[in-house]
Structure formats: structure tokens, C-alpha cells
Amino acid sequence: MSHPILADRSRLAAVCIDMGSVVVDERLTWARWQSLAAKHLRKNGHLIGRTELRAALRAAMQSRAPFVSRQAIAGLGADPDHATAIWSQITNRDRPLKYADAALARLAARHRLVMVANQGLHARGLLEAAGLDRHFSTLLLSDEIKIAKPDERIFRMALDALRLEPEQVAMLGDRLDLDIEPSRRLGMLAIRIRRGPFASQQPLRDDERPHLVFNSLTNAARWLAP
Image 1: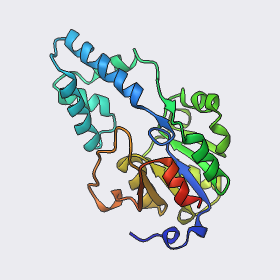
Image 2 (image 1 turned 180 degrees about the vertical axis):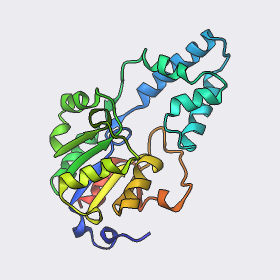
Image 3 (image 1 turned 45 degrees about the horizontal axis):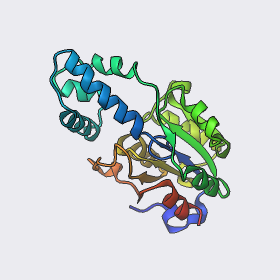
């Protein structure tokens, strides 16, 4: 899996970065959703335990379902609209990863950064409260711009903002379907951060195979900004 940056890291001019599981820890939010989902489904006559629910979520993640929670609930034989009702009861509990600020600072000292993330309207406030927004020249958040990954337009918006060619830019993300495949198809260096709920995803086709894999933003930053 060749790429110009792999042969010569000096070609790298900018980095696009996902938010969930890369910059913020989503586990508390997902754990809360699972807890409420099990109760909600039992209340509505579906005797489903946490183990079954986790298995359904993993299957939905692996199947590339666009709306994982809806697919998981449908897979359990319940109305997928239950997922929306459950999410409406939850306050987002995502928290910045402890090492995110230092890793972003390292990257920003060498390269321009753009956030490319499927996130709700809470995301900008979360980043600003943690002071992480200062590392980015642009924040492209799906609910704000009404375009979501894997739509290539959001990646092209990032490239346009940077005024760079895809071969000069890396994309860091945790999902093979939303981050790796579309960025690689455009010619970007596709880097997988393998952690969080989607770490179990396996490539289904060649375009889903990342050029590089790291287990954290910190380790990716060490390679990208040596």
C-alpha cells in the first residue's frame, strides 16, 4: 500500500483528524446508552440483556450500518425508532482524552490541522471548553455543515480550506467505512486510530485498508511529527 508520504514524510503538509475515539473518549456516552437501552427495551416488552445488546452493536458496527444504534435495535427484533427515544434521554458524556492536547500541540507545531468529524451541535463547545479548538485552522462538524462522512464533499471541503492536494494530507480516524475508505479513495494518507467502539471493524475491501495503524493519537503524532 504505497503512498508518497510513506516514502518521504517531508511531503506531509496537513492533517485531518476525526473526533470520536481519536480526540475524545466516547465510552461513557456509549455505556450510558446501553444501560438505558436495555431498560427501555424491557419496558417495551423486549427481554434483551446487556450481553445481547453489546453483540448487536458490534454486528451493526461491523456491517457498516449508517446508524449503528438503530441497526442494532432492529437486529434484536425491536422497532429501530426506539434508538432515537433512548438517545433523547442522554446528555453527551464524551470527554477529551488525557493525551489529546499534547498530541495535537505536537502535530500543530509542524502541520496545519483540520477536524473532519460526524458530530452533533455539542462538539464545538466541548472542544472550546477544553481549549482543543486552538490547534485547528478549521472545524468541519457534520451537524453544523449538514454534510457527513463518508460523503467525499466533507473531505474536499477540508482540502479546499487547506489549499492542498490530497497527496499532501493525512486523515486520522477510527472507522474504516467513514474515515479510511473515502480519504484513501481521494488519495490522502489514510491512518487508522484503532481504539474505541469501532476497533473491532475488519476491512471488507482494499479501499478500507489503512496505510498505517496506530493505537492512539499520541503514537500517530510521533510518526507524523517526529
